[in-house]
Image (cartoon, rainbow, N blue to C red; front, side):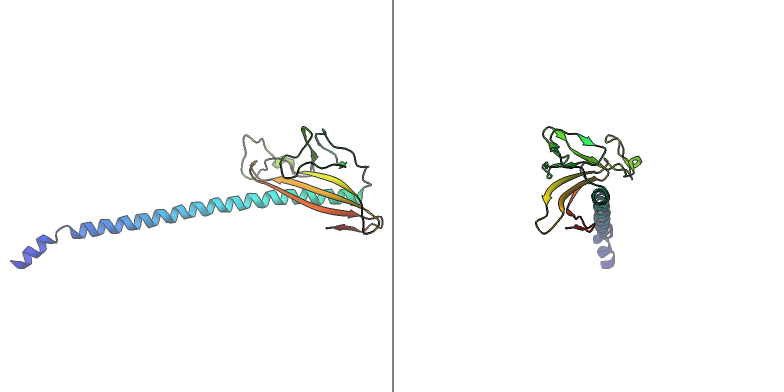
Length: 185
């Protein structure tokens, strides 16, 4: 009789224990899936940042290539000029901490048209594998080199990933010497 009474007092404990274990496992599974989603977002952000940096570096390297393979035109005041399709050397600089760069009231820079423009889309309908905008570069003439013969240029370039929030700006100082040896600082 005592065995029967002990069984009746434990009736339902297995159900409660099983439910508690199920709740703990559910919470663990949900936190695992949430962590996975966060990792996916981080990986996507890193990918977009790398795409933006790559686009900016491409524009910067093209500007350096253009300077070393062409006779640069004299520097002009670029205030009020718009984004240009052809390379231009400017005597003044916009605020490079703001994108797009504005000098006076107009956005300025040179559009890097050698970039794959078919990958640039309408900003209102971005899709995977596209860029928000074509990279831009800006060449500023800093004057004669103090270290010897040659002209010093500052090259700033910007590139975007898939959205307007993913932007990268790179800068270099480039010495164009008459001997044909150029130095990127």
